[in-house]
Amino acid sequence: MAVTSAQQDGPEPARTGQEHLVGTSEQGRFCVANCTCGWRGPARRARSQARTDADGHLAGR
Image 1: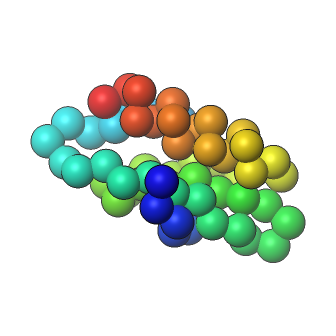
Image 2: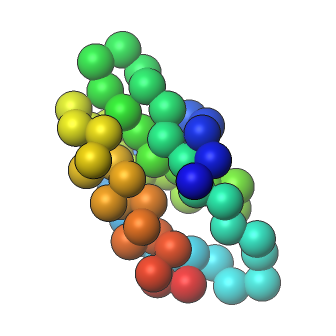
């Protein structure tokens, strides 16, 4: 899992035809999952939940 930064309302399926490298980053007290395709997950207080959001994004490919 790569490390980067981002935010959005929730997991959405990965776009087909693109490479997907997901990661998480810390923004203050929150952790956010994001992907190289432009997807961003919601800010979470728990790193584990941000990683779950990223896994859900990859599963939607």
